[in-house]
Amino acid sequence: MHPEPISTLDFAALALAIKGWSRELGFQQLGISDVNLAKDEQRLLQWLRQERHGEMGYMARHGTRRSRPAELVPGTLRVISVRMDYWPDGSEEAKALLEEKDRAYIARYALGRDYHKVLRKRLQKLAGRIQDEIGAFGYRAFTDSAPVLEKALARNAGLGWIGKHTNLINKNAGSWFFLGELYTDLSLPVDVPAENHCGSCHACMDICPTGAIVAPYQLDARRCIAYLTIEYKGPIPVEFRKVMGNRIFGCDDCQLFCPWNKFARPTMEKDFKPHHGLDDAALVELFNWTEAEFLERTAGSAIRRVGYECWLRNIAVALGNSPSSPEIIAAMQSRTNYPSELVREHVQWALEQHTTRQVM
Image 1 (spheres, helix red, strand yellow):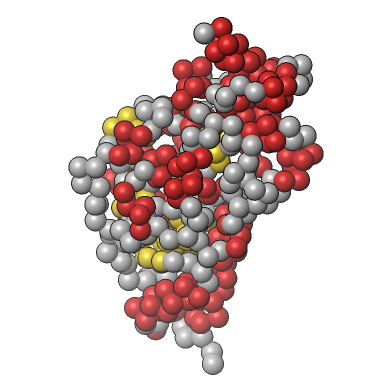
Image 2 (spheres, rainbow, N blue to C red; image 1 turned 180 degrees about the horizontal axis):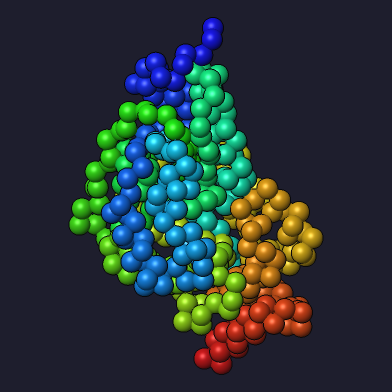
């Protein structure tokens, strides 16, 4: 059977077929949107003017390519958005872990294999399936890997609404999922955008440890623990160190306490299952990793991108917030002469927290 010419395609039938193929590939949902993001572009530009992107300079350098898909990939007419669940079992255990100050809290999305690799590979397979059906067509796959307003596109494609914490929420699945996109030149029918169901709830704003959600639907990244522990490479501002608690890579509080996540379902993807016991590891154990051990045990993980120096920086802060014990004190003292000034300063701060407690 020869592929049908693009000009004679039944695009409605093709869209239904694509949704079926996406489920076969392990995506929980697929939607299609046009490329009009004018209102979102205005919000993005205002956010940048307020410098709420912190030191993520690339956000400004990309200009309007983020909000104008056809500028990023010429010829783009539609965006196919997909979502894939990543929530591991045990939401209550995750909440409880925040109270175990001698153990590390790592954002649930980073416990398994790097999602960029998983989703991009599936998106390429989806594109291949479409190509098998209709022949060559224009497309490009993205997974948080280029200037893409993925949450706005996913909202327009009916996958969910953008909550007050600025994450996407699905009425039937909560928010524990990854997003990915296929920019395409196919004139597929678009889906109905999702309606907002946050209502008067402000649980995410109330629970944010650093007050990073400065107003409904407005996030100041400079105050966000996810930004501070992953994107930011300098010294953690002292004002945020104590409230960081044991969060050493990212922060999930705004999702953990969102009522809609009672509908979240554990992932079926083996790639997203926790590696190396990172869902319940002792801070001292992670702090004692050598750089070689860090590189080996974070291979294929999103954690690798933080780098060993900032890994130690983050854990030092958490150790400063942990209960005193000879083991914890010894671990910190072992790094007091570490070559990195960044690490030494945070270790010194952490030791001072334990000294202050003993005096009191």
